[in-house]
Amino acid sequence: MKLILTHEVNGLGAPGDVVEVKNGYGRNYLLPRGFAIRWTRGGQKQIDLIQRARSARDIRTLDEAKQVAGQVGALTVRLQQRAGEGGRLFGSVTPADIVDAVKATGGPELDKRRIEVKNPIKSVGSHKVQVRLHPEVSATIKLDVVGS
Image (cartoon, rainbow, N blue to C red; front, side, top):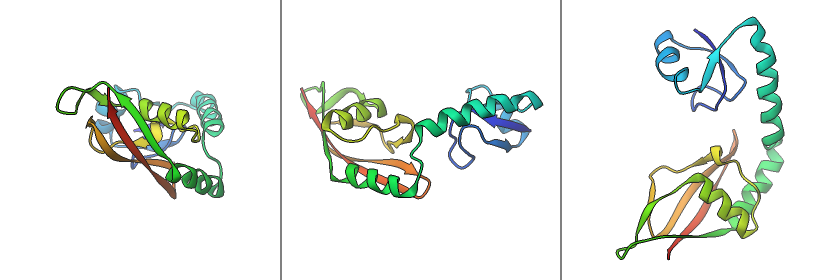
């Protein structure tokens, strides 16, 4: 099955890529979740729009990615969340919360879809979060979650 990706899918591709996948994977996972649309000849216009939007948002060069990684690595981001008595948060820390905290700390503006939170952050304390800035460059954000 030939599909056009509308979102980044790990191990498959980036938005705007045309990929060939097994029928079941496309029909049961990618299409219902909105990660892809069916490929058609007229779909080339959609590919162009998706890639144009992606290029405006992405970090373009490897040098720029390394520079942003240096800025992010030097930051210690402090995030205040509501917490209970034992230091357990009400809810969890989302990638959007992390992006806002980095921006408030004076760091670069990041894309929330590039932040990888391995295990949900549901407790007060120090945590580390990965950010994929470029296919070859990733950075680690030091996150201090403080209860209020």
